Length: 162
Image 1 (tube, rainbow, N blue to C red):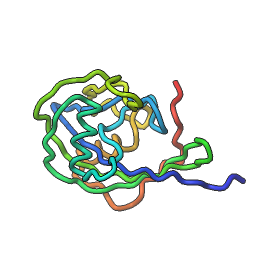
Image 2 (image 1 turned 90 degrees about the vertical axis):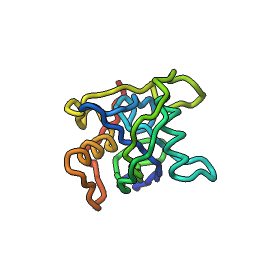
Image 3 (image 1 turned 30 degrees about the horizontal axis):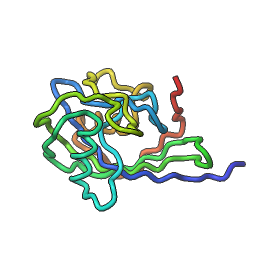
């Protein structure tokens, strides 16, 4: 039996709803590849949470934001067969944000970009088959205004390679 080995990821993510849609990115690497994901990601050395969400959101979408509210922290555990890793333990800080300027950017603006660009996606079209766990949690928050405190485990998660 293969020994479980967890990769821990920590990041900041923006929920930007508008007219029944969410501003999302097309993920092109990692366990959420070929799915919609929230704009955001890991912090750079010495960067605060707020600095990180502003930078990540702009890099991945091209939009400047105003952070309206810190919504909370949620953790996810999903299977991921990558190198010696068996699972990802993803810890996400969620912010409600609004756009203040900018516009859709070129997704290949810098090396190692993990997004194939941003787009508006109708909330009603987001499912476990096309969206990351972060997006699904954002939709849940938009519907209930709650996150809950339990870890979100996705035992039957599969990485989409097509």
